[in-house]
Length: 103
Image (cartoon, rainbow, N blue to C red; front, side, top):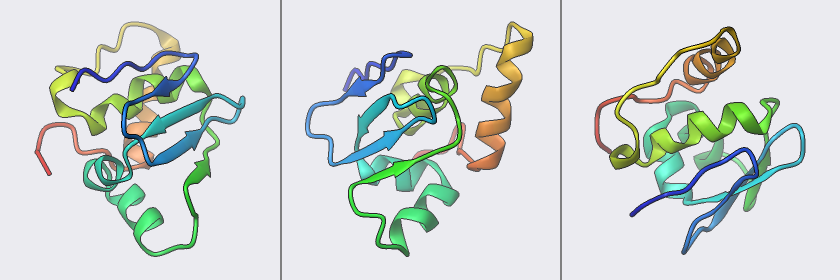
């Protein structure tokens, strides 16, 4: 699958879950991918009645770089290149995103 993420969001085919950024951008993703990619998302989604969406405190520009890690074929490295990228690293740590191991 070629997942497309941008600061304008994502609308992946067959998506069943929506992650909403703090600035209101919708990322329509696959719940199972989110659960497998992040122990925090797994706990959040598996043990609650969150329904089909969750709003996070991160802005769209951060989530557009973090959420692709739920689709391992899409990401080879984090690609830190500017001071603003610290928010990407913080979100990866916060959500305990698995960077290399498959589900």
